Image 1 (cartoon, rainbow, N blue to C red):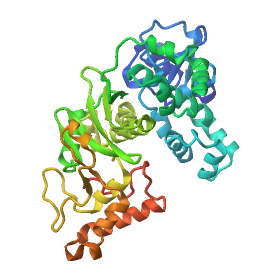
Image 2 (image 1 turned 180 degrees about the vertical axis):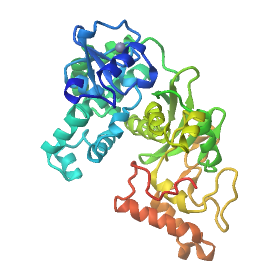
Image 3 (image 1 turned 90 degrees about the horizontal axis):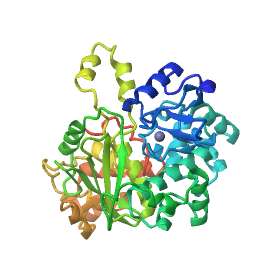
Image 4 (image 1 turned 60 degrees about the horizontal axis):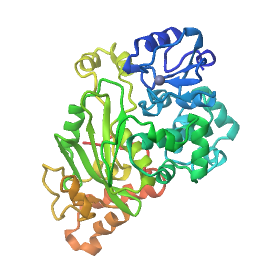
Length: 422
Ligand SMILES: [Zn+2]
């Protein structure tokens, strides 16, 4: 709550009041508004008429509002808010803990396991979370599960049982109990109340990913297009598409902007429901959707070199990578892009040909980025003779070795090579 934390996302009470009354989308996800008279919490952009100031409470995260006993608003859908940038600015330990929770470590592990992985005690971890996030790790994980389930109920036709599993609930009973506790409705009742049918049906799933405007989609698309991996990625006027490893198999994902909305749409085909949350998180990171353009501008507008560029391109984002291992290899290896030349003595050694026959449904991709073990075998010059790709061999082994020691995780931060997309 703001009185205890003094300010939220760099905003004091007066600034929060101004952001609330203006319903400015640039503040969406930077804080949440709870109303004591109704017991509901909202996004700053909620279209419902604002209550009297005396009934308003501010919270830094949805989890903090939920832990204080408030229910999510069914009108503005707090689960659909852009990622909270406040989380990115907190301590390194909290940031790492949030990333691990986002990857599902509390779905089948305990807070004790989490604090052990972080190398700190449980009480210290709880203290850090209350200070920076306003909620306990358990509350953050529970809100994450509930919010993702709510999105699946609203935006897809996935059966309730599969929704529960996809959101990380171990059983349908736990799912129903948690849902009734948070929304005072059953999942079935909530699905019946949704206002519109899903954008797609059948094998494909479409999820909406909100961002804070402005977002320079054309710049992001152009950047990815100039570096698209032949056979694995495709970038055109419709958006960005690629094949991705997914469990034992793989899936096809496509990301494109929704006209007139501060939202990108993620379409997934061929993935098990249990993989959807991870794919959604990865896409959000890759397209830098948690960035806060307002704070970026206020931090850079006084720099004599950067200020003019920030004014000219206010919605620039930093493109991420789908897979840190793939990114590490690309940073050092002569992996050609769609329009580039192939490395000598090698025929697209980084991908598996005809990985999935469904791939052709999304633009004719028939390959996927190889798993580290396969790539290493392929690069072994003893197996392939002198024609093996010498330039690819070392970086592949280096990246695979780093991944084996945990320095490069399957889903994690960008590698520290500093040459990610050169
Ligand atoms: Zn609302």
